[in-house]
Image 1 (cartoon, rainbow, N blue to C red):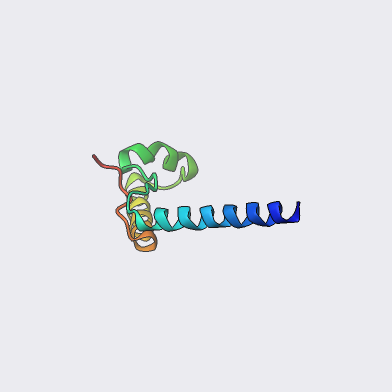
Image 2: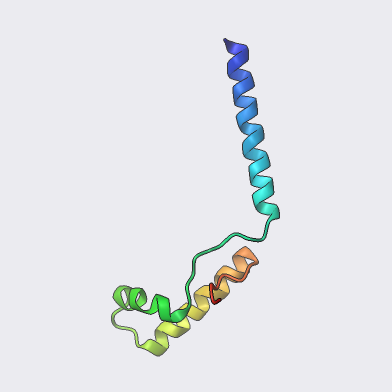
Length: 78
């Protein structure tokens, strides 16, 4: 019984490790930041006192920060 538990745990850890390695090796992860036009209604709801120009700067800063942290282009502009 103990041997089955150890084997199962080892197998699970091995699969999780391999899955993480494969995911890290691929550069196809999406970070779901839409373009400014798609994000504007939500941003206006969260920050009603900011102008559209200020919201655009916030969006620009957010995208730049995400690019820096993930090393990927986070925009979904197709």
